Amino acid sequence: MDNSTVRFTINSEREKAIQDIIKEVNVALIEKGYNPINQLLGYIMSGDPTYITSHNGARSLISKVERDELIEEFIRAYLKLL
Image (cartoon, rainbow, N blue to C red; front, side, top):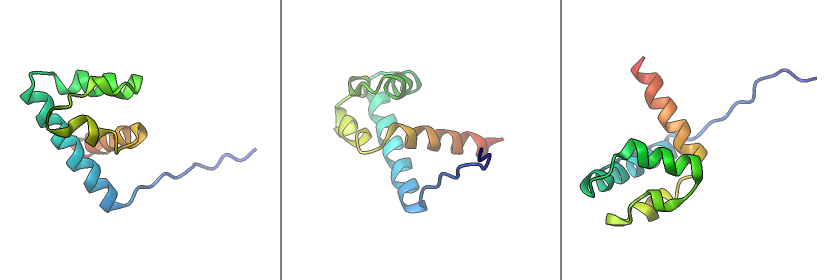
């Protein structure tokens, strides 16, 4: 049995694009009066795009990012805070 760790990488250009999308979606959610944490969590857990407002194209933007990429970016940002 192979016990090696699988390495998952994302290029820095894609990482920056994902960060920008998250920021824009966050602003749109706040502008519409939603709690971004709750809405993004609902979206990530369910895959249901209706958790994200269509205000300012946020729903369209978030659909350009895979949910696992969102999780990776949130973990990366959290770990930088430690």
